[in-house]
Length: 578
Ligand code: ARG
Image 1 (cartoon, rainbow, N blue to C red):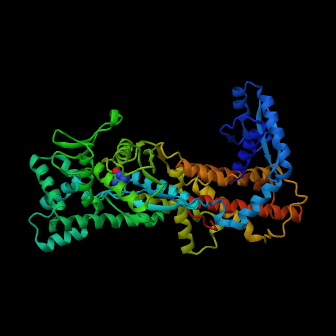
Image 2: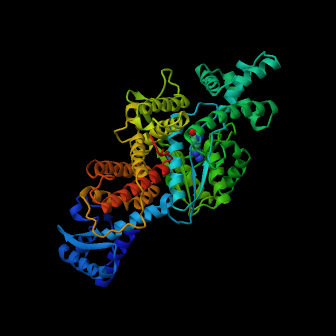
């Protein structure tokens, strides 16, 4: 990558000059007059060496400039201001990037990192509608997964649904004592065949509305039965799972999301005893008011519960079994778990406890978290305070997108089926982009006007720009091989595109490192804006000369490819026409 190349040049120059080698930070200057990269390393060094910053900068720049006689990618190095060193990339380099984009196509920007990473995301809870929070985890997690896969990592995607734990005892109790009580076998079957996740959630909510001691006891009993593999408890619980997964699958299919493995909490049912034993054996578990807890050295974190006073295991216990399983089975270099921000403490405890017990060693353990969804009015929920029904929201998005594209002229030639596909790409893409384009940890606002705004920072805007590029390219033949760069003078709008395209690689890298797909969104948006600016002032098909037309077509093709690559990392489709 060019960034690394420049860092190396600076490092070598420092070595040659006998300067200590500092960490070199490179930035893209705001003002094009300051070049494509800039570093303040001379300012840092000057302080250490007790020299004048400008002088240090001049020395470094001179050393590098000497070297540049054999480097084609950089045109010149200049010193500016109090001692900044600015790098100007060469046109030759920009053209190399163009041809590389067109050659590598979908693989442009991809890496060859050999490490292994587990990305856990989505992880909805059964017996509840798929909530908006799990939508965020699904979208952000999938984008993180895509980014790492693109960089060459061996990625393992895991969906860890919440399908175990004491709440399920409560629902079983409600099912048995409320819904199915006194019914014949035939009636029971009918009820269960028709039951939905909403029904299950209502039963759970009703349980909490006026709970008696007897109900509490009943719920505990039913969870015990479930644990002891009682046939009836098991079959009812299976039913709950089945109904829930059916809904989850519908949502995943609307979102075009496929997760490699589904390994839910219940998978760890028989793996927690060992965990409890391990902690006891190592003296890491203490009895506390009948419960079994793990305390952390110097109380850096509050204690976490391994067993409740009634002997039941917890979410924490399951996650420890989970960590042990993932690490011993896959031997990953890193594990990333994407959930809501409210689980931060939980994961701090899980990660630290996993290290204390030795399940985890040098693996990088990351909790990537997201903020809340809000509407313009406030909290994202129905009047009754229930979670919004996501499937309806997604279908609504597709419907609205359909209405929008019906009004567009360019879709006129499309068949009904093609239009339906575009509507899905735009509607679902809009929802995804609205989420991914904002920093994951912040709260985000759900506003239809913004999500489907063809003129704003939205998926439809990017998709539209892509389709526009494609339409231009359809009208003329592009022959990149014959293209010569001799004599092409570039306009500022053309230069602005060239000076952006090469950064894609860098952005992908940074987005992965920081678990921030929003960086990819920002980049693609910036690119699309610059393209539209270019397009408005630089005629492509009607360019003054043949060379110029070829060059602009080339630029158009490269921009289209990068928009497509970026959107694909975000899990957003790019229709050829819209
Ligand atoms: N099912 C959980 C919830 O909805 C999220 C699971 C997160 N992952 C984990 N390993 N605990 O709150």
